[in-house]
Image 1 (cartoon, one colour):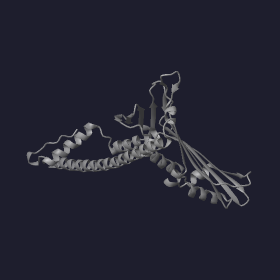
Image 2: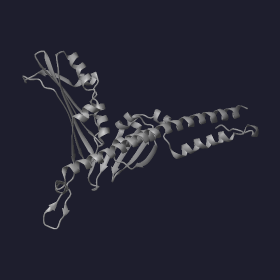
Image 3: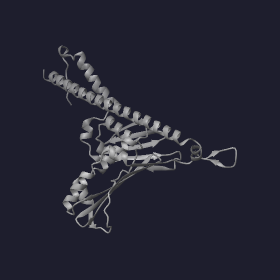
Image 4: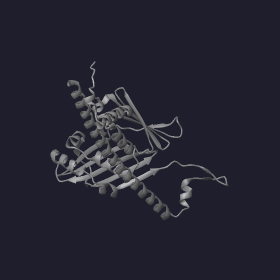
Length: 316
């Protein structure tokens, strides 16, 4: 063990003492340091997310260190972003190791989000000198926000040549007419979005290399493509209300008595409000990320100053 004898003539300045206290404060709070993440294997990182009653409880464990915090959101996309900001763990690692559990009112019933690789099928049918290529992708998402879902669809459907080559099967077609089609179906139920994307296009070639090139080019989707071809279905639980008579009154029955245009206007207004709130949250997260980066940089610089000071005190 090393002991340092402090000479009064070499006392630390006020700035250096503040820096030292800042370092100790950071260590005491339990912020995950970049060094912890850098030296931790993926199997040493555990992330558990429990969503219940409009909030989420997050537990992050790196090696023997455990960090817990709570968020007032159930949007998995936002939860992942906050975890990324607060812990510094890269998003790809978060998505790989996280375990998500969504609990309803009944504690005995829970839904575990499937974070496995999406189901991808690619089939090419040749007819003469032409080829009809069918690309179908299915996956489930823990977010119900349309903007976030759109980004996720773009990311998941954007195929590399290696992915296309591994999934592609070529066979002779039975139909006399080749068809083109693009459709995005999203079914939202109990906070989970089931997504199915189907793309068909016709290519004037039967060469496998040309087909692979076309698949890569045509699976690079845009936001406008998705939104213009989106078929959205929201499943809601039917609740029973006691009326004055013997018949049951359901939310569907109530809505049927309202003006359809009023309902549509109300839904669109609510959707617009939620999209604006989502955009504001994204901006706040970006600001917090920048502040965290700046803070970490300041801390590292102050640590260097302290270490240099201690080294000079040791050798003098």
